[in-house]
Amino acid sequence: MDPRLPLSEEWRDLLQAVAQEHGLAHDAQSLARALSDLSRAYNGLDPASATRGRAALTARLAFSFARDVPKAASAVRELVGAGLLRAPRDRELRVIDVGAGLGAMTWGVAAALANAGQSGKMHAAWIDLDADALAIGTTVAKRAARVGGMEVRVSLERSRGEADLVILGQVLSEMDLALDEGSRASRHEALLREWLERVAPDGSLVVVEPALRDRTRHLHRVRDRLAACGLSPFAPCLHSAPCPALAHATDWCHEDRPIDLPRWLVPLARASGLRWEGLTYSYLVLRRDGRTLRSMLHAKRGLARVTSRALMTKGKSERMLCGEVSRGGERGETLVGGGARVAVLDREKTGREAWDAASRGDLLAFDPPADEGTSRVRLERTRVSAVDATDPSGYPK
Image (tube, rainbow, N blue to C red; front, side, top):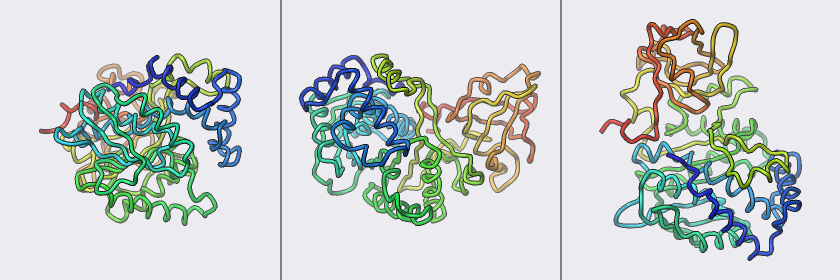
């Protein structure tokens, strides 16, 4: 699945036309200055209020929109691959986009479906306190209308009834900042529970957050509270035990996908001192029906998610993993602990293709799992294979 579908030259022209229609600056110097200021606010260097106003809207439309669309597409990629998010044949797919802003999350969901070859209709109910952002987003929706085979209808009326998908894009990180760590996590646990009640029995709730350490660790805390009450995460976690990343203050689990900015945005990123290679974000997917990615991939042994880049040390390559790698435990496998590394020696040349190619966020299967307590995988004893959770053929029928 290629979630970059909507970021074509046509979208550049569309976004520029919307900026002109709303009287937003679009010259290079003004855009670079506005984007730099917005970046400082998102990174906590300036007050959160700096994310609002016309200058911020200019930067969000010109840059953040294109950056956020593939984040949403990537966050739902495993739901689409597993067949749990699809366009119905007899009705519209019902989506509630909380904190919709300019609507990037909506278009990312549509892109994920279109890139998977789906076609149909989708209705997205947008909710946001920023009326100016919604006005601009509505103009985008009027000009775009569809992504590939997906026809998108947007409304600003509060949706009634159950939704197939509720998505919150970069909402939690901007809420309740004055609360202490524990109170804030409890507040947001309750918020997600409320939104999960709006999800259909076979639907999903998706949270997308920035990959910044503090904001991602906050999402981990919320996730742990939900899991402790019996809500097993669908993804990215492969278990419902306490998040291992919270064991050490310097750890956090986030995605870093090989999805670059479209070429037409690279000069703006350079002028603003921002990266244009790779896509980072954190996410959490919850289901009403209790299904999890791990349960749907039950045939895979020793399943683990890569949670770091490759760590090259003398004589070996290491990666931090979270999942089921060692023998032991109720399933015959145990979790890798927080901060644990798994290594493959450089001298082991055979059968290491999947290990060498793996990057942060990828899934690996170890068959058979390594000996309990062992942090080194012996390739002469264990087969390491890549697992593509976006490929429908990888799921049992």
